[in-house]
Length: 146
Image (cartoon, rainbow, N blue to C red):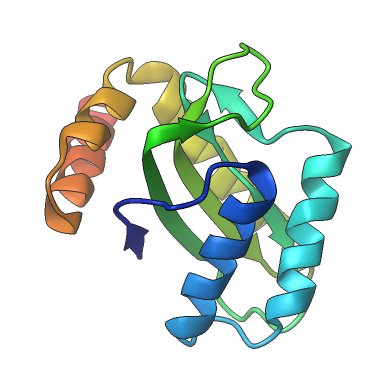
């Protein structure tokens, strides 16, 4: 699941846009609860990890399988990143509170990919369609995993 061009330009509207996308795709039922949980998580501290990437995430009851999606902003969004740079790529992760280790594994894998692949964001921003975005991620993962 990929949003190729976010319309939103601030933290709250990005989260609202990705939650609506998930609702439209029938991936979630509790739209308001998910939005509120993601906003609460951002208030604890920004999920922007630097290098132009943010990983908004939370746990919510009723999610059977973890939800991972990607949203892209060519314009960029100030997601209050620790490095002070705007975010362009958003990996949203939603999982069940019943299996916290899965959530941590997904977050760690994304963070590892972002830190090790210095060209990931540039390549994602150049991708012209969803297939190309997924190819970029696959190629960068293969480089890391040999």
